[in-house]
Length: 435
RNA sequence: GUGGGAGUAGCUCAGUUGGCUAGAGCACUAGGUUGUGAUCCUGGGGGUCGCGGGUUCAAGUCCCGUCUCUCACCCCA
Image 1 (cartoon, rainbow, N blue to C red):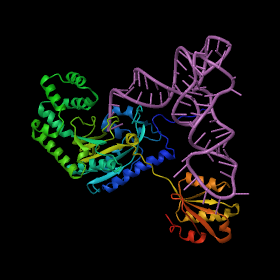
Image 2 (cartoon, helix red, strand yellow; image 1 turned 180 degrees about the vertical axis):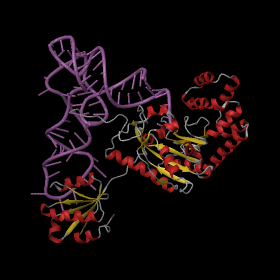
Image 3 (cartoon, rainbow, N blue to C red; image 1 turned 30 degrees about the horizontal axis):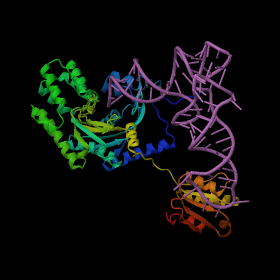
Image 4 (cartoon, helix red, strand yellow; image 1 turned 90 degrees about the vertical axis):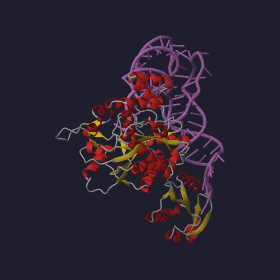
């Protein structure tokens, strides 16, 4: 029989990898909770339409769809490529019963039918946080803060990562005030989005191909070169543009007050694809720029209503595990959820099988992770096994156990050991010396 | 969909102008060790050299095809 290989773009999580994944997820969970978010989840597949109604049919080629043989209506299913549509569906369903703002997070497993490359797989985990029901810029600030709060908790400094922030609505107003037609905006977004991948001359050439009007081209080039919010101020030529600008200034001010101002920069080139964003948008990158974005998000005030619900404002972000893990490995900050045993019981005398099993059983029933060797082998080998399983303590049961009910308890971290009564120890294992 | 790179043990790799039974380190495993765990010593298992064809007395090595993986482009919710 031929061996069947793992599917391209998927990962096997052996215990070592699983420990890393759990460590990452645990960090996401802790930071979510301390920022006031509660966890939710949805099904791993949905109706295909849930994704196509928002993004159009071309998305079908980028997700895994499944014919539903059991369905009478013939509607196809799709494995979730993102969780936001599920979130919108769930929130819409109970919108009148949920207290606002709704602050939810999730760590869904997602699948996309793409060609895998560095930092991008076909199956991955993505931390999502969303704040629904508030149009306050404080909500945008808290969303961005939560992302940075997590990265900062891992030891990443402002010199390692940066949140580049802009505003989709401000940019739109700005462009229209400069004379661009509303239907040309998407083209300009693509232009700005591609700018970082091009040299200056490549970009000039590309921009000239896209914008035929010389005056507009000049304005576009000047806009693209803007480095700070201050430079933008003279270009504000409409009330709507000024409002978007003021909101963005408020956002930066709030992030500074939250203590993460040095992680944040204005970058007019952040537009987040062609998705559903309506206000502030951001992406977090490593400063080394060798990796794709770690995290991306923004305000999406029209999504719930576009999916059949009421007009409810919302903001949030997604952070994938793949790029994150690459960056952490690069910086030497990758950790794993250490597995360990509380006790490893060493049997130094074959006559003690029953006594050893009794001790193991009693320790386990009190909640202590406890193991022993299946083989009757030398004490030295059993110590090796205990060390290999990361046991905190070993208990040696041997001659003195038979003669006077004594065991030897050893602290594996510092090597100290002590003789004590087996019965007393089992009654209260927590009062272990040196632990 | 387009282009580059790479496929030899579980992992990282070596393998000469084609030439004995294809190797090393790590990992795994057993013992040296009848009560003490990092970097002790000795042994053992594990390979369709990605796959198929060709050239040759002889192919891991040369030629052709093919598959897979990987990196980049496109796209990126």
